Length: 148
Image (tube, rainbow, N blue to C red; front, top):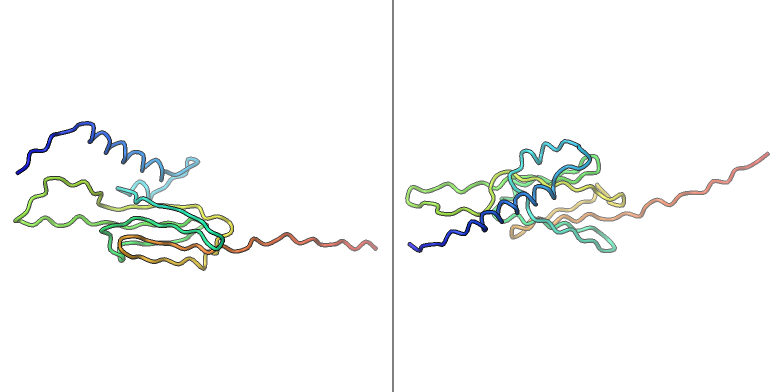
């Protein structure tokens, strides 16, 4: 058995990291967000954009596809799910667990130019990829008034 030197600052960094992630996904404008009160952790997410679409990639290693739910309601995209803790065998003991387990949730306000009916999701190698297709914003029409 190897002896590991205890570093109290490492534990403090872990606490700060969890706190920072919770702030990044906290509700704004005083609105209540029940999903975040239930969430134990939040996956890292990249959001990019090109001419045709927005691309959201969420890191979900160790999460089964069946345990992930993506929904859109009131122009809010929600990714939620759960990573289950592995059962401990009688023959092995856990000495350190650094990965996050439990429920997670992330919410994103969709831009006006996203086609909500044309969102595609793919899950491969622990990465959830969402493609949000852009639509052209309707141009204002000018209506001439006929004066008699």
